[in-house]
Amino acid sequence: QYRGARHPDHIDDVRAALVFLQRTYGFEDNYVLIGHSAGGALAFQLLATSSSATAPATMALTEYPILPAAIVGFEGLYDFTGVDARYGGAYAPFFRGAFGDDYETWDAAAPIQFAGNYTEKWPGGRFVLLGWSPDDTLVDEPEADNMAQRLRDVDGFVGEEVGGAGAGEKKLLLLKDVRGDHDEIWRSGEHVARMAWIALRALRGWALIPYIIYLDTYLGRLSCTDTHGDN
Image (tube, rainbow, N blue to C red; front, top):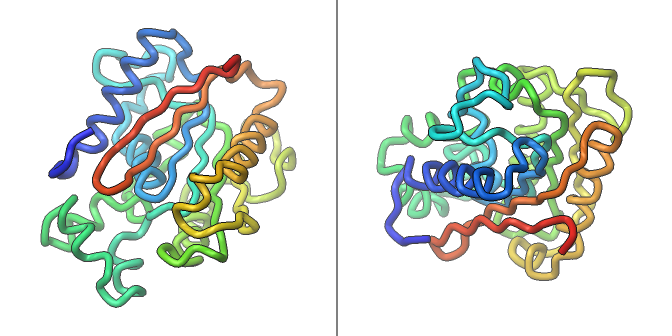
């Protein structure tokens, strides 16, 4: 955790943390990656910058972590120029601090603007949940809606209720009944636990998922927390 980080320092930290955890605990792809706010962006940046040509179990662990079985992003930031425009430039100081002054650099890092295909970059992925609260005063509904549309239209995710996709299809659930303001959600933990449980249910029958890894940013700090399923 450090202040003054500039892109790609944040995602480099995430990769290094995951590599360390996977080396230490050996859980490979048996985990759910949860990202709140900018952590939601980081989760998809991890996919976008991954080494996807090789199957997850054979990725070079010295450079890239093995990607998760599922991703949960809630109150996430996915379209940096878009959300900044909708909020009248209020996000500009935040994004300039992370990406600099060039809007093209913002777009190059924004998950919704990714020029590749998330399905191809994430061959072992099974499930994405995008959560949004109508009580959120910092991130608006289009952020979740537009990212979900991109995953469906560009990347071929199947957007339906948990358990509804066919074999081998990547499932997408857009959940908009989360409650609480932007930071209240993770502080209370109730809806975070619910979203994690939905992801675990979606993976039921596929593999034992012993770990949940949580990404967040708060006042310029990045936290990556590993929670074992037995704890």
